[in-house]
Length: 173
Length: 100
Image: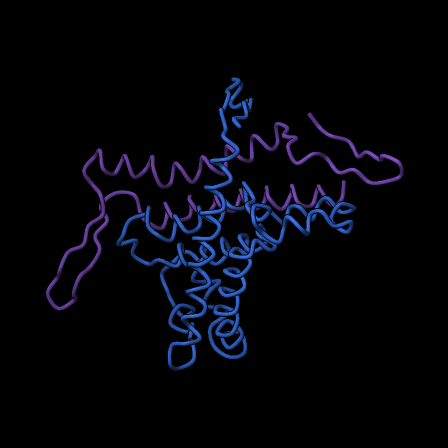
């Protein structure tokens, strides 16, 4: 089924012929792909011998996010980051694979990718790189929300609790 | 168009997520525009004037990255500012859905 979507952009009306079927397939594909990416990244940090250490990243100098990163270097904050990065990646990945709290999971994914992208010192690979696309993919899932297609969000959104609190849809799919 | 708070049968009805006013349009234009300027427009200018960044091997130092025009830090700040504007707009939309 094709939906004719009208929109106003920069003072001019445009139309989009959007196939609901194709959009559904594509968003589910995108959600599962990005979800597995982060789930794999997180699980990999647990199965790799030795504890995960984020110190090298937190101690980076010469990046625009260095002041923020450096403030977490050392002590209890670094220990917390060492725990939160793999755990966060697993939870974000699970959230997207299962379609549970998809937008919230994607927000935290975008948050992490923001620091990975801007934690680049020399931009040796240019400004358009894999980290930027990772960040943009998470934002795309936030924009479209894909959790209600074969996801737990579809069930959550039908509950009375969510129906009485429509703002929760900003966290679901 | 500004949506005012509404109540139907005593139940709070937030503004529709599909309601966009001039503020939303301005935030999206500025946020997305800054990212595009920082990544694509400046990237195009660098390529056009033949001053893209490149790596060079320097004896005793190793491989260094040479930038000859726009500083990568300046570009990075511009792109980051774009994402920060989008984040701020997202927080505004989320807060509005709860508060209004």
